[in-house]
Amino acid sequence: MKVKPCQTRLHAWQGPGCLKRITMTFPQVVLDGDPVVARGTVNSLEDELAHCEVWLEHSDGRRLLEGHATVHMNQD
Image 1: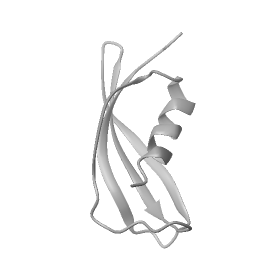
Image 2: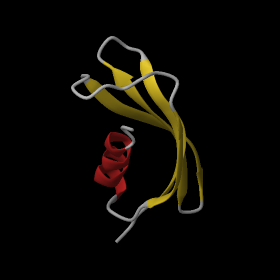
Image 3: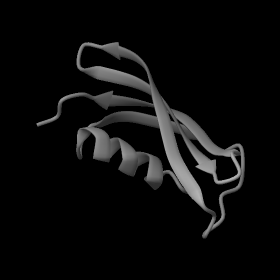
Image 4: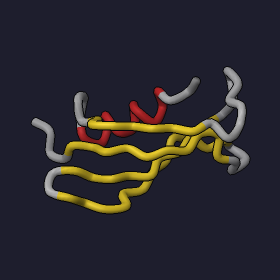
């Protein structure tokens, strides 16, 4: 499983401990050594929470993992 790149990007954005929830599906196989990029968009903001779409993308553009994350904003 390659969920860690998505978690790492969210932590880089809002800090360790920011993840309230993350769910992922695996529509494609991810192999060790595959060139991948973690991407995401913020779909909505609610109080101190950002509801995001997140995915892991192969260098050829295929989405290898897809999911949703709820992130605490402004973690100190």
